[in-house]
Amino acid sequence: MLDHAKRRTVELQSRMKEAGINLALFTDESSIAYLAGFWGYLGIEFGRPTFLILRPEGEPTVITPLMESEMVSAMTWVSDIRPWEDFGQNNWTRVLNETLGSAPEKIWVESMSLPAVVRAFLDERYPSVPLHDISQILGAQRMIKAPEEIDVMRQAGRIAGDMMRAAEGSLKEGLPEYESALAVINAGTRAAAGFLTAKGWEAFVSPMIHNLQILQSGSDTSMVHRRASVKTYRRGDPVYFCFCNMAQFKQYKLGFDRMFHIGEVGDEAARVQQAAIDAQQAAIAAIRPGVLAEEIAFAANEVYRQRGYKTGYRTGRSIGVAYLEAPELKEGDKTILRPGMTFAVDGGISVDGSCGGRIGDSVVVTETGCDYLTDYPRRLLVV
Image (tube, rainbow, N blue to C red; front, side, top):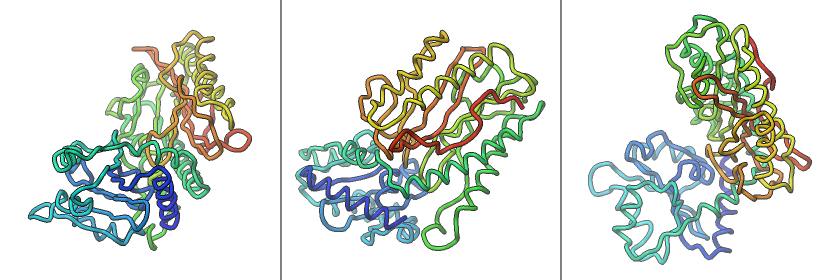
């Protein structure tokens, strides 16, 4: 993995040189993982920023909290690691200032994910230095996944499959929703552990599946992102599982969703769910190199229109080391699909206060169409 991260960094440096970019400052965890091969567990939400500074030539520099520096050193190929301390003069502003220099001509940053505290520092310390956005340049590189990235995403898909089997197996009348969430976490963690060793870089990769399980049951299935609660299942309940913030491995994220029905399914719930499945399948059937991203959305939207349902904001999103990358499968996105692109492709309908229809899978674009990265039955699921 570290050799791959290093090659990605060298490729980005070449892109920077071609674009005339002399200094880039990365703060987003997904970008740092993609380029330097590591991620921490005490990030900006704890007030502790980590930085990767990159120039078109030479070795990058990592600036990280002192308490994380030993682990970072073991996880990254970058040798120039500069720790900072919470107290005293060796704080992150001083270390960052020394690394950037007193008078950079321009600084390229990830504008949409730049932490406010870092932006405030840059504005105060370098008031006359323009900040430019490097997101599109890095995004264009991340858009096409290398074979080793796709291999990891396939492993994530197998882990997600075990999670969904545990979800289905947990569904019983009278069981509280949170018990399903615990079963999912347990199954996913054990599956992820099976792909890891306790040697080298992998020794620092946790198999633990975490985040709050997106789960709704009964009439709450119209609520899309409700979390598992103490509510108990009843016969006839639809139950929706979304793993979009949980199906991940070695920092690579997938989209994966299924709807189940306990004991029986009502006529309206069946119609809504079947329409969502058909819309998703129409979208996936349209995926192939050379088509526009928005054309995939049009294929799904036509199914919704024929069934009398409103279209959603988008049909899918690019996935990778971040939950949302470019392009998106939505009207107006005219990106041409290419082999190696990876997407979460969804079918989704909400009937407010009544029910919802949901299904989601992850796919990789191939030379002739696409392959699934996730696998579970794509039909009405009654348990």
